[in-house]
Length: 217
Ligand code: 13P
Image (cartoon, rainbow, N blue to C red; front, side, top):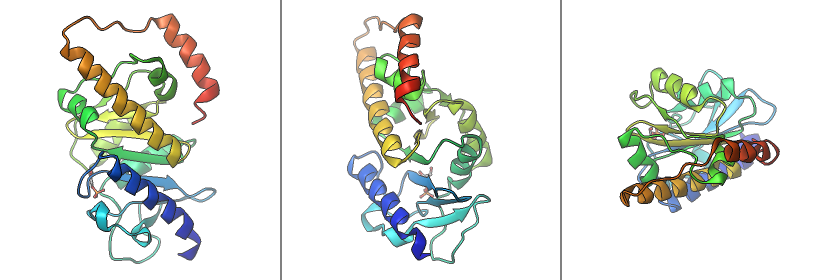
């Protein structure tokens, strides 16, 4: 158990940051990381409000979602979704699922976020797709999210929230900030009723070729 303490503290620190950003309230949302070199993962516990969350409460699980150590709180109900992504995306080292406001507006509209800003295309890999609705914690939601995510780094969960993946928690966290910011820009632009100018395919391709160098999942 002790050998995971530093990683648990790291996950807890980012959980607090996500809460402090206002991207979640109560115990909503969840985060996880892949333990380097092991078939184990650390996930935030289910249903504990962020204000009283402690590093020791982070849950170490195996690739079947079983708790490695006995503890009072089980892993997040979205563990199947986190594990499904780790299974098909070996380069992913961390996942952050939030209920941030502007992404959630897109989630209830079931409207994808087009790559209207170059850096969004660079860091997400293109349009942020909406995963088909399925209940929280279900295997169906896990499947839908894997499908919507594809090779990209961010997805929207219909009537629910969003999700960002990265090589580590810092990358996933910064991406959550970028996607939320772009969702706000997009929604503000839509409100004007004016035409939104999409980036041309060639400028997206230029951005994406740069992205291959800089994204470093
Ligand atoms: P957990 O507290 O189990 O992580 O659930 C929160 C949530 O947002 C489910 O999608």
